[in-house]
Image (tube, rainbow, N blue to C red; front, top):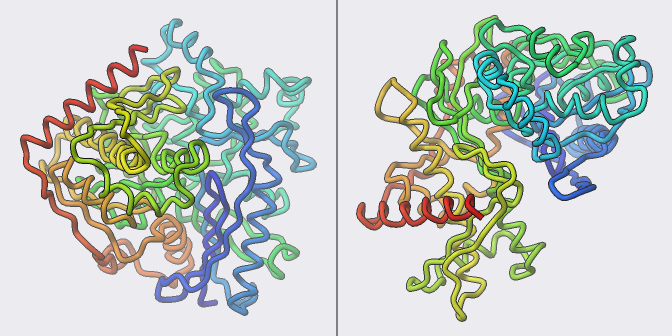
Length: 494
């Protein structure tokens, strides 16, 4: 049993990655699935797509490597967070499409809760802001919208879970209804200080507590797959939400270490140690990971649109054919044009939290073209990261030096990472191992299985690919950032 199978169930695709005994990724299978947009601001997935692509990629990667379940020491799962599934306990079938983390349909209800004076209590217990981003109001919406759902939930016939819980339920044949502390901490139903579901918040949202999964450490025995899925039973030994898994995979185990992942969105986590830090700048307080019953906390900033801005250039405007083209186009942009894109396509995340805001472009001229749009899209990611960077450093009362490690698809663009370093005025470290999210899940499972090293040993394996250092004049940097801030405020004001 020398391999770990990592399942990375993401927002647009599902991947299965095999890691060997040396924690090297040796095979990968990936399948995309459909995105559903029933109304403006609504985003859904068919849970069967999540399940079927999970099983298919797991079987595919094992077949390509020529291994069987007997070669697997365990499974690690990492998943898109906050995405909400409610399913029938008996059949395992969802009663409604999964409501995706990007979905904004419960914004009005969040305003009702805020007007009712509940945000301070929710923030104290969960570390989260009152926002449709999180799972709690999504569960309420499903129970309210689906006929007889509330009656069935009260009878114990329905279960709620984030994607990890849904997959584990299916993988174990309904034997395990579990989650880990990181996913639980993103539901807006979990008290991160007490390490337990909040009866007060569940009552406020009218979510029956018997629907909720059992919360475990990130490295634990979550159940065993049924033999029909992979050919034999395999233990599930590690689970973490995707951004926390990337934090683990980047070995950000010391307070003051920060990782920023650039995928569909951008998510930055700053390790703050064994005590939750209350943000004064609208950052989130969350569980970075939990091992041996002890949570480690983080400040998190969420950017809703990062790589999705490039997808918009490709799929929405049709000015590029592949995402990679932006890295070649951006350097060709006219330096005399200051085109700025504020990509608030689904609202603005941290530190603004403006769910109803929509995107805007500033500085267009008659000669603005694909190069200027490409540069603006890539720089929007750097500017938004600067927003998070400033807010976190203001909240963080520990060491003044913050180590920033990057990963995700956009981190492979040298131009983008150099722009990020320039606009932050700080070094940006890109690791050799780019599969940090899957690696984090694999390490959790492998450590639990006893084939991978402990935290200290794992941290020692982290290796630098390239460090980007600031090349921009400080005055130009601050002038550019000030212009960005004005553009954001103008966008919010529309």
